[in-house]
View (tube, rainbow, N blue to C red):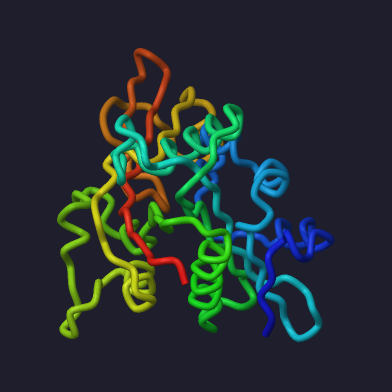
Length: 249
C-alpha cells in the first residue's frame, strides 16, 4: 500500500478528508470550538505536507494522519501543555497568522476507514507521519493521544489509567500501546486537553440523556464525566489526553 502527503497529491484532499470516523465516535466531540481553527480545508491550505493518506490497491485513501505545525521553542510555551489539543490548535493558528516559522508538528488525528479497522493501518499512518515530520525538517512530533479504552472507566483519573500495564509491560490501552510500540514516549497527562461546553438542550440531542440533575454525568464514549449545572443551563466536558512524543524519521 502507498502512503503520500497531500502536498504531493493535492487532488486526493477531498477523498482523504471524507474518510468517516467510526460509528461509535461521540457526537458531542463536534462541539469543540478549538477544532474550528484547524478544520480540514485550513490544514490542507497551510500544512499539506503534514497530512498523510494511506491508499489502497486502487489508489483510494483509506486512512489519514493530520498534523499542524507551531513554534514550540518559546519561554511561554511548555513542551507538553496541560491544555493539550485545544492549546496546540490555538498556537498553530496563532503562528500561522503571525507568520512564524514552526519547529514542531502536532498530530491532531489518525482516522482509519471503519471497513479497515484492525489491519494495522493506524500504525502505518503513524510511521508515515514521523517521516513527513522529518522531511519537513521539524524538530519533534508530539501527540495529545486520546486513549479510547479509557471510555470504559470514565471516572478513573487519567493519571491512574496511564499507569495500567499488561504483563509484558506495555500500556493496557490499545492506542497508547500502538504509540509505544512505534517508539513513542509517554510524557505527561494533559488534564484539560479538549473542552466542550454547551446548553443542556444540545447535550440532550448529542447523547439522548436527560441532563436534568446537577453534578457529573457519564456520557457514552466520554473519557471523563460532563459537569452539569441545571441552574445555569449548561454542561462542560473537559477531556484529559496523554502527551506522547515521537522522534522524526
